[in-house]
Image (tube, rainbow, N blue to C red):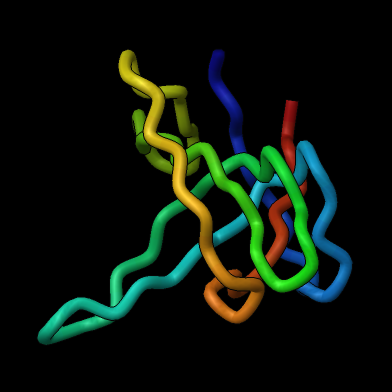
Length: 82
């Protein structure tokens, strides 16, 4: 499955099936990933991380990469561009 993302929206209203930009802090810098929201639970969100194929097109990796993140880690919600 491929997903192209376009306009960014506020991360205030996170819902299942949204695509989102998630930011993590490593020892030296911040890194950003795109993921699909799987579950929303109070202050935490389960995300299936996607891999960039080209430009702004993302695909599901062969092996699922899911993780729970805090709402504060979500920078913005993306609109799918079919």
